[in-house]
Length: 205
Ligand code: TYD
Image (cartoon, rainbow, N blue to C red; front, side):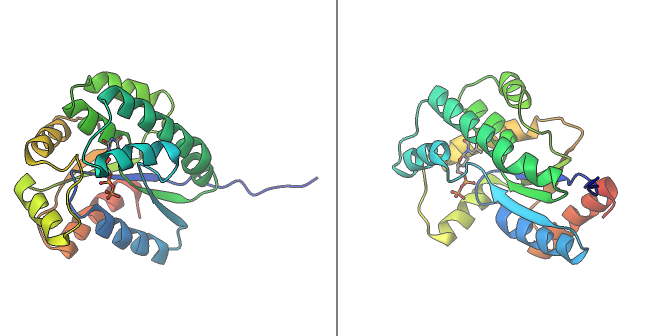
Protein backbone atom coordinates (compact mmCIF):
# COMPACT_ATOMS: atom_id res chain seq x y z
CA UNK A 1 0.00 0.00 0.00
CA UNK A 2 1.29 3.45 -0.85
CA UNK A 3 1.70 5.77 2.07
CA UNK A 4 1.90 9.50 1.64
CA UNK A 5 3.42 11.81 4.19
CA UNK A 6 0.65 14.21 5.16
CA UNK A 7 1.65 17.85 4.75
CA UNK A 8 1.27 20.28 7.54
CA UNK A 9 -1.02 22.97 6.22
CA UNK A 10 0.70 26.27 5.37
CA UNK A 11 -0.30 29.67 6.71
CA UNK A 12 -2.10 32.45 4.86
CA UNK A 13 -0.67 35.93 5.49
CA UNK A 14 -2.37 38.94 3.96
CA UNK A 15 -1.15 42.50 3.43
CA UNK A 16 -3.65 45.32 3.23
CA UNK A 17 -3.70 49.10 3.10
CA UNK A 18 -4.26 51.94 0.68
CA UNK A 19 -2.10 52.19 -2.43
CA UNK A 20 1.43 53.48 -1.78
CA UNK A 21 1.90 51.92 1.68
CA UNK A 22 4.80 49.66 0.65
CA UNK A 23 2.99 46.32 0.72
CA UNK A 24 5.00 44.69 -2.04
CA UNK A 25 8.39 45.64 -0.54
CA UNK A 26 7.35 44.24 2.83
CA UNK A 27 6.01 41.04 1.25
CA UNK A 28 9.30 40.44 -0.58
CA UNK A 29 11.30 40.91 2.63
CA UNK A 30 9.03 38.63 4.65
CA UNK A 31 9.13 35.96 1.92
CA UNK A 32 12.92 36.01 2.02
CA UNK A 33 12.92 35.73 5.82
CA UNK A 34 10.51 32.79 5.85
CA UNK A 35 12.36 30.96 3.06
CA UNK A 36 15.59 31.32 5.02
CA UNK A 37 13.80 29.42 7.79
CA UNK A 38 13.14 26.52 5.44
CA UNK A 39 9.53 27.28 4.60
CA UNK A 40 8.10 27.04 1.10
CA UNK A 41 6.59 30.42 0.30
CA UNK A 42 4.39 31.66 -2.54
CA UNK A 43 3.61 35.34 -3.06
CA UNK A 44 0.65 36.57 -5.06
CA UNK A 45 -1.80 39.45 -5.36
CA UNK A 46 -5.43 40.41 -5.99
CA UNK A 47 -7.04 41.42 -8.23
CA UNK A 48 -5.32 38.63 -10.20
CA UNK A 49 -4.35 38.92 -13.84
CA UNK A 50 -7.19 36.54 -14.74
CA UNK A 51 -10.08 37.82 -16.91
CA UNK A 52 -12.27 39.03 -14.00
CA UNK A 53 -9.49 40.90 -12.23
CA UNK A 54 -8.29 42.44 -15.49
CA UNK A 55 -11.73 43.83 -16.18
CA UNK A 56 -11.60 45.87 -12.95
CA UNK A 57 -7.95 46.92 -13.42
CA UNK A 58 -8.47 48.05 -17.01
CA UNK A 59 -11.50 50.13 -16.11
CA UNK A 60 -9.64 51.83 -13.24
CA UNK A 61 -6.60 52.53 -15.43
CA UNK A 62 -8.80 54.14 -18.06
CA UNK A 63 -9.91 56.56 -15.32
CA UNK A 64 -13.44 55.22 -15.08
CA UNK A 65 -14.43 52.62 -12.57
CA UNK A 66 -17.15 50.05 -13.14
CA UNK A 67 -20.31 50.43 -11.07
CA UNK A 68 -19.78 49.21 -7.51
CA UNK A 69 -22.14 46.29 -8.19
CA UNK A 70 -20.12 45.21 -11.22
CA UNK A 71 -16.85 45.58 -9.31
CA UNK A 72 -18.17 43.35 -6.54
CA UNK A 73 -19.36 40.73 -9.02
CA UNK A 74 -16.07 40.68 -10.97
CA UNK A 75 -13.84 40.73 -7.90
CA UNK A 76 -15.81 37.96 -6.16
CA UNK A 77 -15.49 35.82 -9.26
CA UNK A 78 -11.77 36.63 -9.46
CA UNK A 79 -11.31 35.68 -5.80
CA UNK A 80 -13.33 32.47 -6.12
CA UNK A 81 -11.03 31.29 -8.89
CA UNK A 82 -7.96 32.38 -6.93
CA UNK A 83 -8.99 30.57 -3.74
CA UNK A 84 -9.96 27.38 -5.55
CA UNK A 85 -7.20 27.34 -8.14
CA UNK A 86 -4.22 28.65 -6.21
CA UNK A 87 -4.58 29.61 -2.52
CA UNK A 88 -6.21 26.42 -1.19
CA UNK A 89 -4.01 23.96 -3.16
CA UNK A 90 -0.86 25.81 -2.06
CA UNK A 91 -1.88 25.81 1.63
CA UNK A 92 -2.84 22.14 1.44
CA UNK A 93 0.59 21.35 0.00
CA UNK A 94 2.18 22.95 3.07
CA UNK A 95 3.17 26.22 1.41
CA UNK A 96 2.92 29.59 3.09
CA UNK A 97 0.99 32.06 0.97
CA UNK A 98 1.66 35.80 1.20
CA UNK A 99 -1.02 37.91 -0.48
CA UNK A 100 -0.95 41.52 -1.58
CA UNK A 101 -4.65 42.36 -1.01
CA UNK A 102 -7.53 39.97 -0.33
CA UNK A 103 -11.11 40.38 0.75
CA UNK A 104 -10.41 43.13 3.29
CA UNK A 105 -9.65 45.25 0.19
CA UNK A 106 -13.17 44.61 -0.99
CA UNK A 107 -14.61 45.62 2.38
CA UNK A 108 -12.48 48.79 2.37
CA UNK A 109 -12.72 49.88 -1.30
CA UNK A 110 -16.21 48.74 -2.26
CA UNK A 111 -17.33 49.63 1.28
CA UNK A 112 -15.98 53.15 0.80
CA UNK A 113 -17.90 53.19 -2.49
CA UNK A 114 -21.22 52.65 -0.71
CA UNK A 115 -21.60 48.87 -0.30
CA UNK A 116 -22.43 47.41 3.12
CA UNK A 117 -19.13 46.41 4.75
CA UNK A 118 -20.54 43.59 6.93
CA UNK A 119 -22.41 42.11 4.00
CA UNK A 120 -19.23 42.18 1.92
CA UNK A 121 -17.45 40.31 4.68
CA UNK A 122 -20.14 37.63 4.78
CA UNK A 123 -20.19 37.22 0.99
CA UNK A 124 -16.45 36.64 0.99
CA UNK A 125 -16.22 34.41 4.05
CA UNK A 126 -18.74 32.05 2.45
CA UNK A 127 -15.95 30.76 0.23
CA UNK A 128 -12.68 32.54 1.02
CA UNK A 129 -10.14 31.00 3.40
CA UNK A 130 -9.82 33.19 6.50
CA UNK A 131 -6.26 34.51 6.88
CA UNK A 132 -4.07 33.30 9.74
CA UNK A 133 -2.63 36.80 10.01
CA UNK A 134 -3.46 40.00 8.14
CA UNK A 135 -1.52 43.27 8.31
CA UNK A 136 -3.04 46.66 7.76
CA UNK A 137 -0.13 48.90 6.76
CA UNK A 138 -1.27 52.28 7.98
CA UNK A 139 0.26 55.56 6.80
CA UNK A 140 -1.25 59.02 6.40
CA UNK A 141 -3.08 59.37 3.08
CA UNK A 142 -1.01 62.43 2.03
CA UNK A 143 2.15 60.42 2.47
CA UNK A 144 0.81 57.50 0.44
CA UNK A 145 -0.11 59.92 -2.35
CA UNK A 146 3.38 61.46 -2.25
CA UNK A 147 4.90 58.00 -2.63
CA UNK A 148 2.62 57.25 -5.57
CA UNK A 149 3.56 60.56 -7.21
CA UNK A 150 7.26 59.86 -6.65
CA UNK A 151 6.85 56.52 -8.43
CA UNK A 152 5.48 58.48 -11.37
CA UNK A 153 3.03 55.79 -12.50
CA UNK A 154 0.13 58.19 -12.74
CA UNK A 155 -3.07 57.60 -10.81
CA UNK A 156 -5.84 55.16 -11.54
CA UNK A 157 -9.44 55.86 -10.66
CA UNK A 158 -9.03 54.42 -7.12
CA UNK A 159 -6.20 56.75 -6.18
CA UNK A 160 -7.89 60.00 -5.19
CA UNK A 161 -7.29 61.64 -1.84
CA UNK A 162 -10.87 61.89 -0.57
CA UNK A 163 -11.63 58.34 -1.66
CA UNK A 164 -8.45 56.92 -0.09
CA UNK A 165 -9.30 58.71 3.16
CA UNK A 166 -12.65 56.95 3.15
CA UNK A 167 -10.92 53.62 2.41
CA UNK A 168 -8.50 54.18 5.32
CA UNK A 169 -11.52 54.96 7.49
CA UNK A 170 -13.04 51.55 6.75
CA UNK A 171 -9.75 49.75 7.47
CA UNK A 172 -9.45 51.57 10.80
CA UNK A 173 -12.88 50.32 11.88
CA UNK A 174 -12.12 46.63 11.20
CA UNK A 175 -11.88 44.43 14.26
CA UNK A 176 -10.80 40.90 13.45
CA UNK A 177 -8.65 39.10 16.02
CA UNK A 178 -6.21 38.14 13.26
CA UNK A 179 -5.86 41.69 11.86
CA UNK A 180 -2.84 43.68 13.03
CA UNK A 181 -2.32 47.37 12.42
CA UNK A 182 1.25 48.24 11.55
CA UNK A 183 2.49 51.81 11.52
CA UNK A 184 4.05 51.90 8.10
CA UNK A 185 5.56 55.37 7.90
CA UNK A 186 8.90 54.31 9.42
CA UNK A 187 11.89 52.99 7.47
CA UNK A 188 11.48 49.80 5.46
CA UNK A 189 13.58 47.95 8.07
CA UNK A 190 11.53 49.23 11.02
CA UNK A 191 8.28 48.23 9.39
CA UNK A 192 9.63 44.77 8.51
CA UNK A 193 10.74 44.35 12.12
CA UNK A 194 7.23 45.10 13.39
CA UNK A 195 5.80 42.59 10.93
CA UNK A 196 8.25 39.85 11.99
CA UNK A 197 7.42 40.40 15.66
CA UNK A 198 3.78 39.66 14.94
CA UNK A 199 4.67 36.59 12.84
CA UNK A 200 6.80 35.25 15.67
CA UNK A 201 4.13 35.90 18.27
CA UNK A 202 1.23 34.52 16.22
CA UNK A 203 2.81 31.77 14.12
CA UNK A 204 5.97 30.93 16.04
CA UNK A 205 8.41 31.57 13.18
P1 TYD B 1 -3.42 47.27 -6.56
O1 TYD B 1 -2.94 46.38 -5.49
O2 TYD B 1 -3.26 48.72 -6.36
O3 TYD B 1 -2.76 46.83 -7.92
P2 TYD B 1 -1.51 47.51 -8.64
O4 TYD B 1 -0.48 47.72 -7.58
O5 TYD B 1 -1.15 46.47 -9.67
O6 TYD B 1 -2.06 48.78 -9.22
O7 TYD B 1 -4.95 46.93 -6.84
C1 TYD B 1 -5.71 47.65 -7.79
C2 TYD B 1 -6.90 48.30 -7.16
O8 TYD B 1 -7.93 47.35 -6.92
C3 TYD B 1 -6.61 48.95 -5.82
O9 TYD B 1 -6.72 50.36 -5.95
C4 TYD B 1 -7.67 48.43 -4.90
C5 TYD B 1 -8.68 47.77 -5.78
N1 TYD B 1 -9.37 46.60 -5.18
C6 TYD B 1 -10.70 46.71 -4.84
O10 TYD B 1 -11.31 47.79 -5.04
N2 TYD B 1 -11.37 45.64 -4.30
C7 TYD B 1 -10.74 44.45 -4.09
O11 TYD B 1 -11.39 43.48 -3.60
C8 TYD B 1 -9.35 44.34 -4.43
C9 TYD B 1 -8.62 43.06 -4.21
C10 TYD B 1 -8.70 45.44 -4.97
